Image (cartoon, rainbow, N blue to C red; front, side):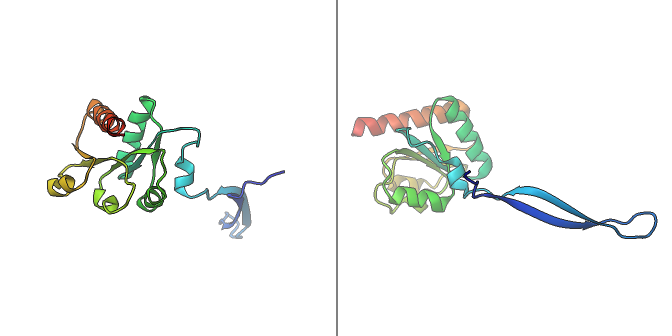
Length: 159
């Protein structure tokens, strides 16, 4: 039998007062789940050929992921550190990086096209980043879908 390496037993003692003044002890035993690193939970199956990586604030990441998944896209939400590792390894599946921190990825070789999501764009920064499109927040669902389509179509045409 294979055990889940992320599951374990948690024990906690609890004391409670009762009307007699005595303090009975209780032991609570339960299963805890600490879970694998966040990026492993959100990694897409390797069978997919195109992957969109989102490095954004949690609420925006959830929204972007939900919208693009409805469009049939394979989307993974990652923290900056995990995304940097993936891009540094030049993972060919990554066809688009959606982020509010494009400067983090600017100097890396093999950076996929970027969709820069922000409420106040740094236009000078965006102009220095090849294959970067700016989508200003707040945006409509269709604007996001169109921007992703335009950036990925432009990438295919350039190859």
